[in-house]
Length: 580
Ligand code: SF4
Image 1 (spheres, rainbow, N blue to C red):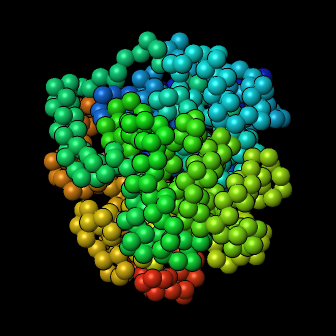
Image 2: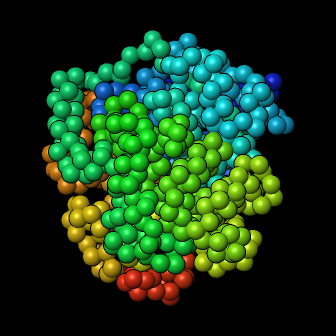
């Protein structure tokens, strides 16, 4: 990965392509690279949809190699949802393919003339940009079908749906999975709106004729990869729970802990949880889709294989297996306990190109505002369809929970820095509350998944209901996560990495063998810190202060049943998270 593909969408005479050496950014990847480019090249005060913002799409450091689990793609920019720096992360095939084609990053710059829409095609021979006016208004599924018809089945696609074209702040960027379906999304922060502002509908990648990226020390790399795979297979979560039930294995666990945000964060337990749990979902999928339907990887080289396929009652494909966060967002958070309805909404989100977490939280706020009753699945489906149609109501909803809350005069809006909270109530998983409050990304569980020690007893144990120990936990996890996000590894490897020293060492050994380095665990920590430092500096320059590192007031005042407690970490303590 020795070059960066820059496309100036605003160049005179149409988009200008420039593949340049990776230069100062050499050795960086994934979130490390997206955040480095955004913090160095994007003016923090620019408009997120303006010509000075850049959309950076970067494979991880090990993407395109034979390292198991290394196919995550990072997408970075100034976020139209939060106004701060953003890295959104997706699975699917594009990361591996871009890595093999030698691209450390694609950077979309400038703004196109008028409402022009383009397709970018990348293969071993170079890059072509062509008019994509014929794709205007299409969802991700139709867009990918047209690309398949044009370029065959061996491609991968990075695309936006209607929401991205409308530049809505809840818009995602879709990546195709191994079945060439647009099911894996860089969901958070409105990255799809930035791609829409650049006038790029789809990036088609064809890596035919390219080989796997080769390590500097093949024997050491092979050995480290072997230990790595064995470690992932050995751990209970990565070797058993995730492959059997997918991420939705968490529904019963989080509900039993009283931390499952229900009816727009009004309660911590949902009476319909067992109807939408991972166990119920796996049974349903197996019954409808046959054995094996519930477990496969979202990209080649994934050995955890937490993904699956959701079929309707007639055995027809609906969507990929909805993830825990999606099942919660459109399920318990809206009082809905119908997996078929949730799967329908997941399909709509994927097709329109919407972040399922943001949309679920938004529908929850809309229900609190009286636009629909909690539990009314058909009403929720209709509201999401409004977004796809681009009606005035749909544009408000598609702009996220914060905008919807303002439009309807609602105080109880579960956002930090304008971004919706995911599927863990911060009052009963206080460590995740610290992450929500302080991560530069806006409320984001993946930025420092304190659920590990708070609920799952992974990487130690910290009482989820008390403030003690949460600052250190969230700090250490945010540092570790930033480093993992740079490697291109799926974050789920963290369970094994946190619990098994030899698995953590195997990851470091793989990086060292691949790049001919001699990094230590301390160096990895420093890498994570340097990424967070870049991101925080960008946010400060964009106008953020420590007062933005807070949860909404009501989490400090309103007790959450059944534990009846509030968020107990003080503002002074929150300000210590980055004091390392
Ligand atoms: S574990 Fe799941 S999310 Fe991670 S790469 Fe595999 S299928 Fe994708």
